[in-house]
Image (cartoon, rainbow, N blue to C red):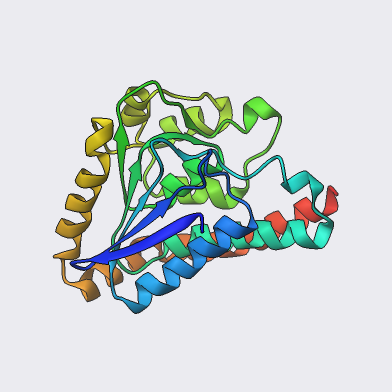
Length: 231
């Protein structure tokens, strides 16, 4: 298993650890989706944490090109569905960014309500422009929920990879702490947010994300159609 699930005092810890870069393939995404369903059933707040040095390196670019069209579309559809599931989760979701968060790894960050990062020689960002790729519209719309327009232009258009301090300045992270304290701090924040009445938190989050979440859902289908046409 690439993801472990631990429920304690109303907070579900989802720990991503494939022993490498936590690259998102069909297996990891499937496990993440199962954990989301479990957290929903447990009525829990969520902390999504990486392994030391890596939150996630993004989509698994080593295996995706080897897939046939049907398998590729399945993985991309799961990716979009999981990101939307986190973005639209009715309870608090806090990211414990334990290291690098590149491309899809930063999309995972953006799907979370709050993002606690580790100080250190790490790189974070949406570097698709640098790779000659166009970001899906649904990623941009998710980012609009918490990234100021000027910062979003720098993140999405320039595609620079940022150090944690710069990621904090641009809003990709909300708080920085020492690497060995990231998970503890994320649990503290998830616990504090979980003290807000669940119905109120879910309702107001839905009102803030409502139209945007519907747009994201539609754009995922458009993204899949585009990817299929490029095969």
